[in-house]
Length: 232
Length: 232
DNA sequence: CGTCATCTTGAAACGGCTCAATGCTCGTGG
DNA sequence: CCACGAGCATTGAGCCGTTTCAAGATGACG
Image (tube, rainbow over all chains, first blue to last red; front, side):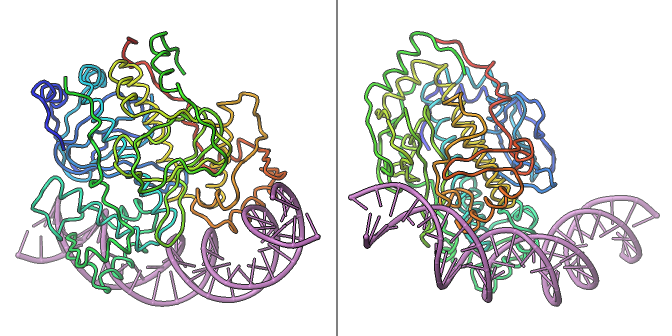
């Protein structure tokens, strides 16, 4: 996104000092538990969710390499969400005081933290609009496009085909649908020639059309970083 | 929330230097328009929304006095959302470079900015879970509680009774429902003795029960600000 | 006093859910 | 190498919450 100075790179490296290997389905932080540690996700895929008291689950966000995990630890005594790995993962834990140091000493990194936070916020509003105002098929289409794009950001070789790690139940919990209906919608997308499935591997057959019916907007174009303060 | 030093107060005051009066239904920023100015909302109530291409609207957030408006101007060239006043408002416009200065010179204010941003993000995830996984009645209940609580933060005299500025169509656009169904649910809440209506004035008659059926969580308790860097 | 937005209510249609049964895949232990 | 079990995917039938469409009623405002 932007080139860091040597001093900035050193500051970031302090956050990635240690690293920990995690199996699939490992809970990093449990909703309502006290917490204080933050993480950088180095490898693998994870997600955050909340449970409602009727037992249903809403998946809030999927996490990919490079993402900062548990930033809400900065603000809340107890975690507002559960964070769990979806694949085997490598994470770098660090103390929140370290992040405070980085942000205090490096205004431009503080600004970049603001940027990623705002982008995450806009991603949430996009999903809010999807849940509030679009059909089941559109929501699933948007999810497919989003995950493909985020996988591609880490691995440029990914094209129309990618491994969707999620179960249909997880797709449902992310989009506010039941797994049964997710299944029907996936089949319908397939019948319409927009999608091809092979186990967990998905191939997008008509991306422009899918983007249109899903009301999908890629928020990575349109960034403006001209205002960033000078590096220190 | 926290006491500022004289130097910090002066820095904040620079943001609130100028002020502008706005009529009800004034668009501050239009979705997809280029923008660069930010605002502090001093008085009144506003909201942000997006329009989908079928013409439907999703209201993303309601804004109250003290809220920072258009922070996404920091990040995106074109606004991801429309911002419009719901009542007559007073706003203080300021240039984004000013915010950068404040954040660079005052690490603790930078941290506080992070806090309010994270709180806004968690509020969005709460609404996401509401839209994805709760009933119409629960969503409306949560909206009523949320707005009452935010009004009360500005005006301590507000108790169970408050003026809901919104039309039923706006309630629907915020909760992902139609205005017709909002009407039916409000009547149902009234019949169940949870709510009393008089024009735009609402009275919550059984707040604990409403909180429970709405799955509502007040995120203002549970904050942890112990990690803030020292004031400068 | 008329106009326009908003609220209200009914009837019918529809999208997505629930319940239930079956099939598939893959990892595990014998 | 096979049998088993557990989780996941698939499909059908019927139901229910919410939407759509339509028609008044109410109220604010020029």
